[in-house]
Length: 287
Ligand SMILES: O=C(O)CCC(=O)/C=C/C=C(\O)C(=O)O
Image 1 (cartoon, helix red, strand yellow):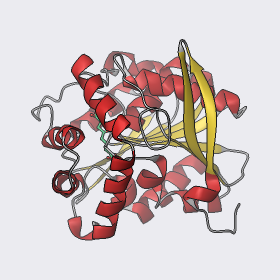
Image 2 (tube, helix red, strand yellow):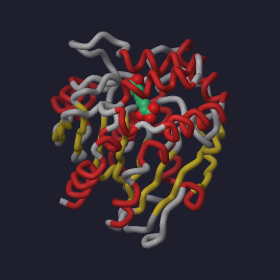
Image 3 (cartoon, rainbow, N blue to C red):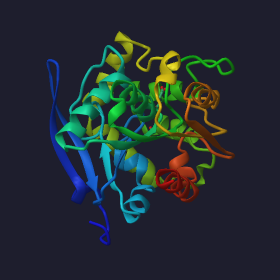
Image 4 (cartoon, rainbow, N blue to C red):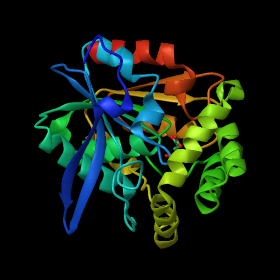
């Protein structure tokens, strides 16, 4: 695939994953070829997907010789829908285990955004031998912030958008999502709205999941020291969804972590500072 333009359609694949009683059809994008694989896990916003979250990061990693797998978590994009009453971080981690087993990948690097970061940590705790390096952006663990009232203003807007999926509510959420809103085009809003409204079952099931268990993302702080993988934690200093002190908690708990904070950056560091982000990740993965 290297040397050709990657598209969502040309890289789109499905796999069936069994998780206890569950039999889930999971969508993923499989990009590039390489001895090492980077799995990218998206966040929990309505209409999110691997392709939507990481469209500025796939090509540079593929060009550098990595295979990139974008897994759409159950409840997002073209993956099956689900009501999650327990830990969504652990559910995603079990589904990822099913995917890496199905693809016969011994060990993967994982790059996770927000919920994707929480899920990457859950995977590393359950399957330490299957993890190369971790990159966590705006996520990695749930839990309270000592400084910021929770739920944060961003999470309140996210939950409001799930309940009432309108273009106005989408714009309200996206406007606190990134620091510089000038890159948020009408085209981007419309694509995201279409993604959301295509799968009303995902929206309804997220609301039901929250009603059944408001704490979908547990606090992994007490177990972070178990993770020996080298970890690059990346945060936006203006993150209004998952506050930056969560990054400091990760740094304190993970024995082999380093933290980079982007100034003038919200919850989407991999998109808002894509060029520098991509250079940092490639440097981190190769050294
Ligand atoms: O509640 C949390 O801790 C996680 C919130 C989260 O995952 C938000 C992510 C939003 C996106 O990445 C998105 O909508 O693209």
